[in-house]
Amino acid sequence: MSTSTFGGRARGGARGRARWIGVAAALGLLVPGGAAVAYAGQAGHAGQAGDAAAPPAAVAAPSEEFPRLTPAVAAKLDEAVREVQARAAIPGVIVSLSAPGKGEYVRAFGVADKATGAAMTPNLNMRIGSETKTFTVTALLQLVDQGKVGLDDPIGKYVSGVPNGDRITLRELAGMRSGLFNYSEDEDFFKALTSDPRREFTPRELLAYSFKHPVNFAPNAKFQYCNTNLILLGLVVEKIGGQPLAAYINERVSKPAGLRHTLFPVGAEFPTPHAHGYTNQTADGKTADATDWNPSWGWAAGAMISDLPDLRSWAKTLATGTLLTPATQAQRLKVSPAGNLPDTGYGLGIFNVDGWIGHNGSLPGYQSLTIYLPAEQATLVVLLNTDTAYEGAEPSTLFGEAITKIVTPEHVYRLPSQGATPAH
Image (cartoon, rainbow, N blue to C red; front, side, top):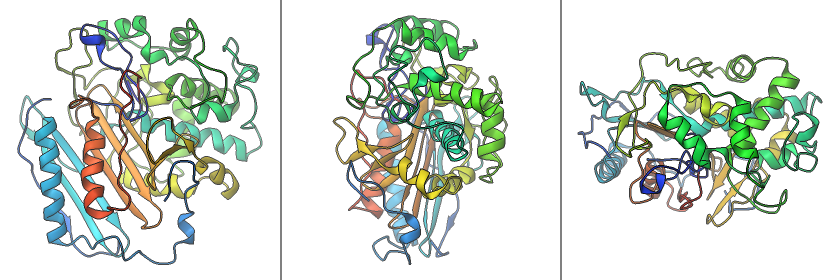
């Protein structure tokens, strides 16, 4: 399933069926040796939950607090990444860290294919799970800027049959405050997906898994990460944008953002070269190769594919609002406390974790993390080919925390999963 450290996996199967899809999403496999790739030396490289992120444009010069990514710093990062990889049994991982005037760190460790032993390399396409939410919400906000929809419109204006549809607003859906049941937590959904992971789900089928359950709470009463919210927003974009969601995002979001290898697939297509992905989110709990599973079950919440260069670019585009008006971007970045997650707030399809702005993603076989620190103009991207949790922790979060402890100790990325609550 898709999502981020917020989401949640649908529960099912023996072993409590784990959590499906999400909370930054996650999920031991082989411990391959790390293959270091490319270190480019010295080329030119906010806030607590509830605070809006500082506008990056206001930063006049690179911060002196972010270290130059010298070989000595790179060696520390190598050690930290390898330690997490070994401890959590991650087959392969790609990491990119950069900031203006401070150089860049780009590495690939481990294997992209356990069967052949092919090395992980920085040029591989990867499934990005709930990072898809940042694209879907951007598409919605573009329609807001065009005056075609309003954030405070009720979802019932656009989609029929939604529980509390006359009261839940588009803003509450994007901000994870709708109260709707997360379809990816439904037992029947889990059984359907794991019995045939290559089947195609329609958006309405996904919503049906949610709508058979009572709502969890009144609109805007609290934060709860929920993939159902994004399926609804995807339907709004389709209806008002006049195109299938995949076409709209590929043409109106990814292309204007200059992203050349970012794709919203219409089926199980997966451009080459790509890494194989491994998951234990299966009917029997055994690890399987999920590379060719159909991501339609994640749709607007988690179906997309991208690569390292595109995500490095998207991190800044997302955080600085290049595709939106300043007023709309300010609304996106206005965060509310994200439940019991410390130092963490959630805006409109975006989070702020101790100053790092962006999103994580997870679906069977893959996890990702793409974040931007405005004060330092720093970008961190992590891509890995498993979603198997390590002692309840999301692997992408383990990498994010280990890396930020070294380079931004005052802004450490920590995004704990929420136990039984499905995430990402």
